[in-house]
Length: 230
Image (cartoon, rainbow, N blue to C red):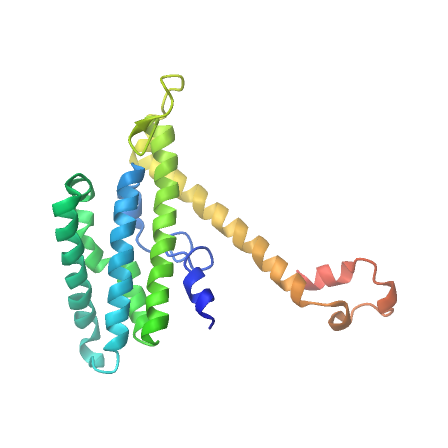
């Protein structure tokens, strides 16, 4: 697999939240404010990247029978580091994230990538996978939090942007609003992936490979090729 593909898979094709549907609990909980989403995303990128790296380096040393406890020890080490740093330098975000910061230890995204990717691939590939998945998680959180904060509170990153002209939709700052925005983003992700998939298939099938037209010189837009792609 190309290095660029490993890095970019987490953004759309294998987005951990919208496609793999992992980490839903912190996604819904911390996306009321964009700054909190960025804090959780940054912490997750750090933990995911370095835990993937260490687990990949130790993949031939860790006994298979105790691999999950070993993964948790590695992950909890980096969660402790990021927790202490945020508590010292970003106390407001640390308090806002609350219990969801230490719960990164058992986040399905972190454990899932450790089990499915880092334990089976090289350190470089595992590091790129951690960065890509972390960026995909952060991007999803930021978009979702931005929508909820702007429409639910009338602010963005804590600054008032409506100037009292528009009345905020308070339901978007609550749990039902979170599920609604989450569902809309998932639907949009599926739509984009289907469009991308059809485009890739149509690109791969040429007139010469189609075989459905008896007279290939009279193809004229190749309606048959489009039907084959579908």
